[in-house]
Image 1: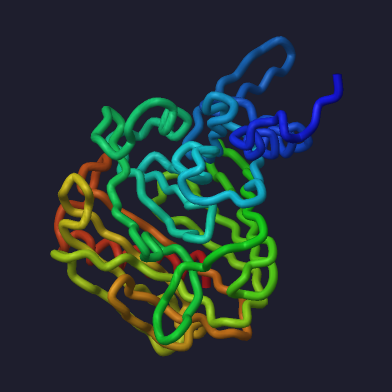
Image 2: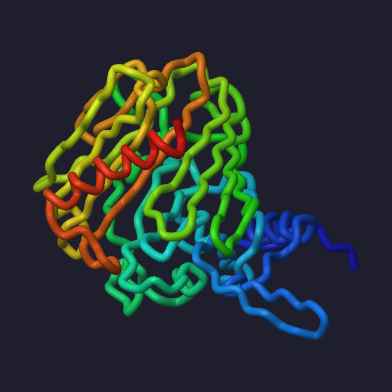
Length: 322
């Protein structure tokens, strides 16, 4: 009996596309620990950071690579928590793998690695033993996502022919996720971004490679009951923009920050959704994003301590990343 494409339910098209992509790239194995076997001895290395891409089509199994199928849109339920995630002992992040390209925050109440259990049946918008999703992103750039400067505002990066995410390194002390936007409509070409997190750090390093026809921006969502904080150096040193206050979904105190080199930007900006920085067109953006939640282990619980942490982080960056 001859079978035509009409007999394949449309609801399976997206799933089949992703499964084919994974077949060629290979499924990632569980990385809660790394096993090193030498001379019949097994040594367990404790993971201090972790990256995760969970595929709902495979029951939430973590994979190393995923590409969005044609006509993919937010809410299609292909990927756990809608994109790749990465975490340290202190905080977790997720990126919306679609035209939003915004960064969300998982507040962690434990130093254990938790991402491989998130979005696999639990409601991460409600408090769990490990913590929860603590940031409302909406139409903003979230906690340091990048977008474009258009019509005097920072806007989300927008559609592309395809989005893909790949875990380049997964612990035990550093994890790297690479995200590609193929044929970005607003930029008029491809975009590649790498997100790197290291052990015992809240910082994620973001490195963007793009020849975008619009200026690129990075921004922080603006919520009521928060205070805008910034320090802009005139030299090549690192600077920051930040927001602190009762902006978590708990609700309780949450601090957000972007660290950048002053020489890399044109100016600071602000619109109804975001505080943001505008990058110069003649260089590829490189910056750090960070979030600090009062309920994390040894969390920052007030504005004064957040200011101290911002200052200490500037000193660290000017020493280690000049």
